[in-house]
Image (tube, rainbow, N blue to C red; front, side):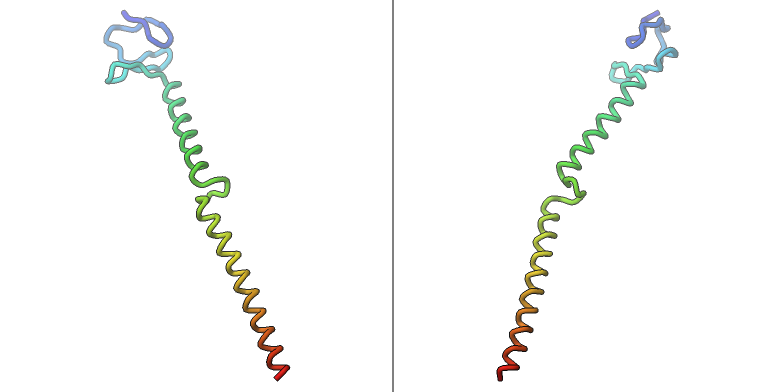
Length: 97
């Protein structure tokens, strides 16, 4: 008989899992409980969220995309203002002539 590494209950020598805590011996010789598996999943999910936040920022877009979008919006506004000014100038010139 051997003790379970997690809950210390007695296990037969050939046992691969513990019926009390649900832990299991791994092929690499380690021991893993269901709690360990869940914690590893949560850690991986947190890591993915941090990576995504660093890469995309709060808006869900890459920072460069966000700034390019803002700059192109400013460019459109500037072109609109220039075209409106050109039309106004053309009307004034036509009235003078």
